[in-house]
Image (cartoon, rainbow, N blue to C red; front, top):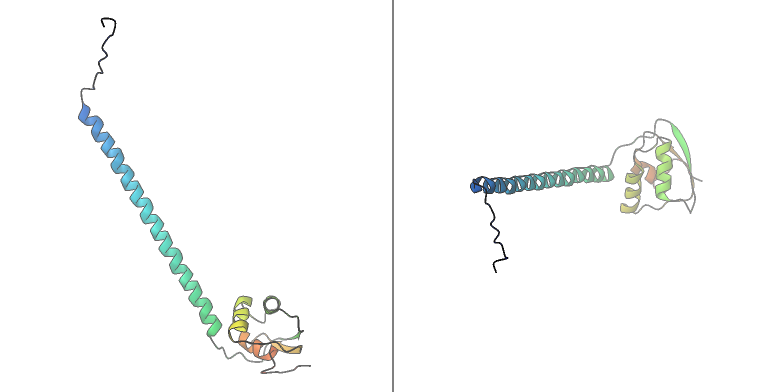
Length: 144
């Protein structure tokens, strides 16, 4: 056993300093981890709050009853049996009769409107429920 040399590991003279830097690194990691969690939860709360605000505004526009008048620019709209409400809503938005085709479609579904085939006159000052009233034959200004 004389051939075996014993290895000795030299320890640094200031072992406490090395340990404190390890603790500092662990503490820094914990602080960064906590900051990331706080940032994540803050963003999550913001997204939920903005989603709720958007849902409230959409719901309000679906259920509000505006007193749209039959004035402004007039447009003829032809409705067939195959007319799809969302496509019609998008076309009405393009010509400036309604503001939001999705509100128009939600009102069509929620209030159980049924289009009556024919040609109708709608006005730019009408709200989407007024347009739906006309297109369903409930408040017809002109139909054929």
